[in-house]
Structure formats: structure tokens, C-alpha cells
Length: 521
Image (cartoon, rainbow, N blue to C red; front, side, top):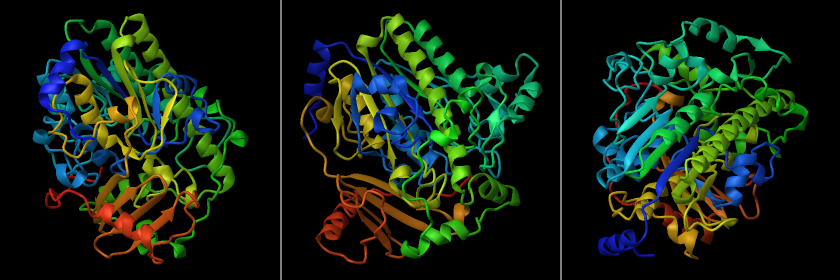
């Protein structure tokens, strides 16, 4: 569908009120980990949101790690164009400020961000000057609330995972200041670290004694609700509420960590590592040594970003806690949606729920994320509810979270050509328009696994192709007939491979040179 002209957009905007936009994201949340997807995870509020709106069953991330994916959601640009093509690379403010927050602010919206941002690197080799760098955060005092990356108002957590809470003020930001303000920070950290029964053997998994009232998911819900209650009605708002879970470590607080019994969770159908059947980089990424500049950065990569193979009992414990983290987010989503209703904002608010990327969660014997683009990592949930959005509709066409900026511009009635890789989802939501494929790319630098890759992936309704442009190796899966991605058909060639290769090579030629990493994460 051709882009509508600026004049047509202005005419549409003149006859309807511009909607508020509420983007809610989770972190490392698989696209099948919702009740409506059939897994045994309790998400009643997200299930209700999907029933009252439209969901996309084949939405993928433009990149399978945090920083590049989030930068693409903000800018509408692919990673090799905005420059954040791997973790450890900061999004340049000039690109961030030209993203949807800055564009909507200039069009008269109040724009705000609450929660985990991760537009810039946390663990840096030297101070970088950004508020998200641990070595620079203290330069931003208690009166700082933005602007940041086009958002006029921000309330941030420095990293967002309780594993990193020993960063009290002046290093921490709004969540950390709140967390430590009553002088009980050390007590809270001790409670977080306490291993409550039942005992678990799974890696990076425990039942935390940190009271739910102090948890970052609760804080994100509380601050989002406060924003909705106090926001003036003179302007529409665009708010991004960003939950940092269910990202590892898998450390839901009780009682949420016990909500799903390990014996009741669903294990992956295929959970064996078969590296001999996969492209060379699968084994190399798992066994390589990160090439970082300091031992500390290497330790972060090796200890925090890798999990050894888990047996079925361990995997059940890990998944049960992961589900608990999701259910706690779902609970806060319900609170936020209730506040929208109470404030009279629901009828004119476009609500979007999605995530930055998924997690293997035991698929093919893997946990967390890396350069193996199986569906559990690549696919994310995407739900849209709001004015003009059909209820109960499911769109099976392949789309991307990269498409959100153009979608926001479309509903706000402003030109969206600045998000040049993004395509509005509105024709798919309100009509019968179709999509052929969605695109993902990752220029992986050696700091993560010791190897360098230039991966490109295309996902259609029935198939998926990933190619490393450096070595020429690849993998091709016929998802319609091989949903568990067991048979790599790349070497067999054929018409399907040629069709997908044409899609893969259709990427616009606006890539920037590879950028330098300022840190590891």
C-alpha cells in the first residue's frame, strides 16, 4: 500500500481526535508465552487485551538482543542504519531524537518514558557521558527527568535487573533513588538474595524474598499509573512503559515465583543440542571466548550471558520462574489498563504490548539469546487495542516491531517518512493488506562470543532464511512443514531458497560502517 500524502494525513487528523499512544514492553519475552498462545502461563489481562484488540501472530524483532532492537523500535531504522548493530554500542542522540518520541513531541504530543531504556551501554570501558552508563550516571542529579532520546519526561532505572541493584545513588536513577530513599536498601538487597524454598538447581533461578512492593515491575506499573492520573488533558500523550522482565536472572519474588508449579509447565518439544546439523557459528558462538578489552567485561559476558545445558528438572524450574515474572508483568498491565478506564482515557488511547526479543527457553538445548535465530528468540508478541482497531482479529502476515514508529505516525496523523524502514501496521489492522516478509539483521562483534558475524534473516508466513554475509553459510527452515526447525534446507537450494535470498538482498543500501563498542552491555 502506497504511503498517504501529507495532505491526506492532515485531512484525516482534522476530522478525528489524535489518539493517545501507550506502548508497553517487556524484555526477553517469547512470542508464545501468553495464555492465548496455548502455553501454560497465566496472563489473563494480556489475554483480555488481545481479545479486545488485534494481535499479530508472526511478529519478529529486527534484532535478537536488547540495544539494537530497542533502537529500531524508537527510530524505525534497521540496526546497520541507526548504527546500534550489537549490544555495547550507544544510540547516537541525533538518531534517537529523530525517532517517534521526538517526532510526536514536535507534533504537539507530550512524550514520556518510564522503566528500562537501554538505548545506551551500561557497562562501559570509560565514562561515555550518557545517563545509562554506570560510569557517567552520577552526572545526572535527582532533578534530572530528561529530555532523553526525544522523550520530554523520563523516569529510568539504571539497568533494571535486580542482579545489579548494588548501584545506589548517586549512580542510580529514579527507581534506584526510590528504592534506597528509606534507608533500607541493604535490607532489600539481602531479601532479594535470600533463597526461599523450594530449593532449585536451575541456573540463574531462585525464589526471591524481595517484597513485591519493592520490585521493579511494581514500580514501573505504579509510575505509569501516576503519569496517567496526573497528565494534563490539553495534549495527547505518547508514553513508553518498559518492564525489564522476564529477562534473566529468573528471580520472580514470591508468591509470583510459585504461581506455576514446575511439574505443570510445558517443556519444549525439541530440547537437544544438535550442533553438527547447524551452521558453523552455532558451535563457535557457544564455545568461543569473548574478546573484550578487560577481564571484568569478559566475566560479565561469560557468567551472566551464558547458561550451560539444563536437564528437564532444571528447565522446569527455570520456566516456572520465567512464567512467574510474566504473570507479575501481566498483573501490572491489568492495573495500567484499569487506570486508563478510571481516568476516562481508554476510548481514545492506542495501547500496544510487545517485547524487544524472545528467549530460547530450552529450545534446541539453549537458554537466553545469541546468533541462533530460532522462533522462540526471533518471534515476539504484538497486541494493539484502540480506536478503530477490530476486536479479536489475528493477523498472520509477517511484521516487525520495526513497524511501530510508522504506525504511531499514521494514527497521529503526521508524516512518517523519517522512519524509512518502518511500514504502518494500520492497513493490516483495519483492512486486508498483506505482507510478504519481515527482516532482521545483526552485525555481531567478537566481544560477545569471540566471533564476528553479519547475519541477515527474512521471515515469511511459511519459511525463514538466515545467512552470514561474511562466510556465506546459512540455514533455511520450512516452518509450515517443520515448525520445530529440525531440518536445515540451506544446502538443498531450490526455488524457496532463491525466493528468500531475493528478499534478504532487498535491504536498502543505507548501511553505516560498523560502529565501535563503548562497552559490553
